[in-house]
Amino acid sequence: LAAPEHIVHVNDHPANTHFPRNLFITSKYTVLTFPFKNLYEQFRRVANSYFLVITAMQLVPGVSPFPIYITIFPLAVILGVTAVKEGWEDYGRHRSDARVNNALVTRLTDKGEPASTKSSAVRVGDIIAVDRDTVCSADIVVL
Image 1 (cartoon, rainbow, N blue to C red):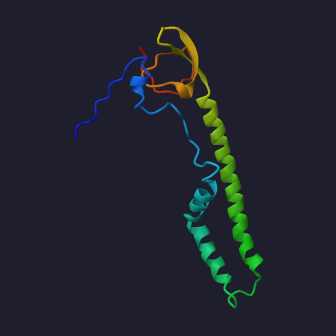
Image 2 (image 1 turned 60 degrees about the vertical axis):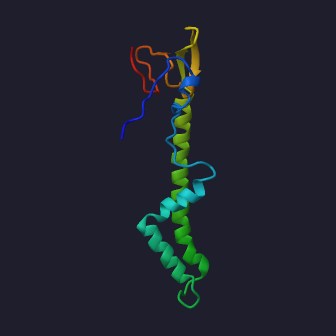
Image 3 (image 1 turned 30 degrees about the vertical axis):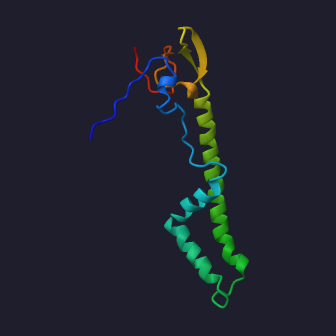
């Protein structure tokens, strides 16, 4: 198989639209996917799956001498605490992503004038100015 040919046009946004954006996303969840993905991740752990099976068996009338709420409470607490911890960590990743994606960089426009641009708006082929000791959140070729 031959590798596809990539031609980069310098400072030509319309010609480089087929390249991916310079957007950093390190978070695992969104607001809509959090409950589903989090439960999936938690029940991938053998211990949580084991406790789910034990809880389900104890919910059968006549098998467990305990009331339903005492049977479900320990599993619910473990799942709830872990979900809160995972949610807090992912919220931190969202904040970190926003900080990196909104960092300002200096990009040369088509006319050769410097313009301040968000890091997430940098595209393949853009010419950006990088000063000494400046963090740049993009893969760049130093000229």
